[in-house]
Image 1 (cartoon, rainbow, N blue to C red):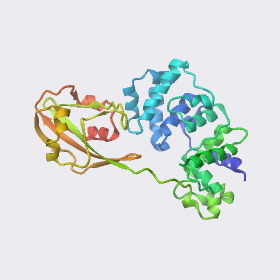
Image 2 (cartoon, rainbow, N blue to C red; image 1 turned 90 degrees about the horizontal axis):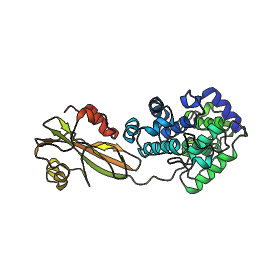
Image 3 (cartoon, rainbow, N blue to C red; image 1 turned 120 degrees about the vertical axis):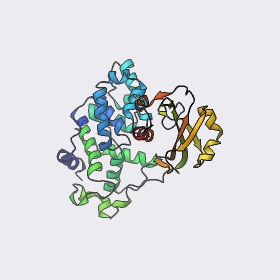
Image 4 (cartoon, rainbow, N blue to C red; image 1 turned 60 degrees about the horizontal axis):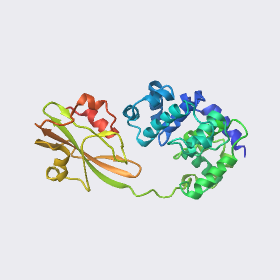
Length: 346
């Protein structure tokens, strides 16, 4: 099987023109890899361009405020990536003089950098012979070699990493790793792979056994937890509102949100009015309460399904820590709140 040479040849013809492929700068490769974790290229590309424009080197990123980084990240989700991105930038700038580690092992010591990201940076920037294994690589290898070990099992992770390492060429490691990932993204896709024009078709076990749709195998996901979030949109007589910073760990940590009452199920206006947390959270003299969206907004995350209602709380009280709506637009907020603020006419 001419696995390596066929992939490299395919890549030279079909690879996408992407800005991080025009450089060996570890800062830019690291930034692209963090942005593209759990994010498709078409979604991540504008964010990469924005970050490079706003933070052209690791020093600018390190000197930025966390709120500023989170605001630029807004809409990408998995905000722990942005917080780790900022912490790592500060570490590299302040402790390493702006110079990124040059080996896989040293790169693993950076916050937010795991096996995949360390392998990508080490191979692309420094040609270290380490295999990159992401979702695309799992798919290509499982189909081509007919492997049905679950890719999210301990055994599967070890098996695929070992196989990927054994397939590494003796040179052009970075190009080969990118070729394998690109092949999974463009050719050997999850649905409707282009098998009729595949350079690996002769040696593909899944194609020969009509098993394409069944590979790769993945263990069932963790049960999704449903949460019911009631955001209190405070509307003062002076045309101001209130946003609070989420301090607790979990989703949206360090982002801003409207005061929140979380309930075990969807609640009515009457139930909200009598809820003990309403007084504790707002301490307002309420003139009127209205539901903004009677139909819940359902916001799906990896292991959570959020059922969201926005409640308009009109008040004649002086509201402590209130801000203008213009100020609210400049804060880093979850995408569902950003969309509400953008469309809301107070």
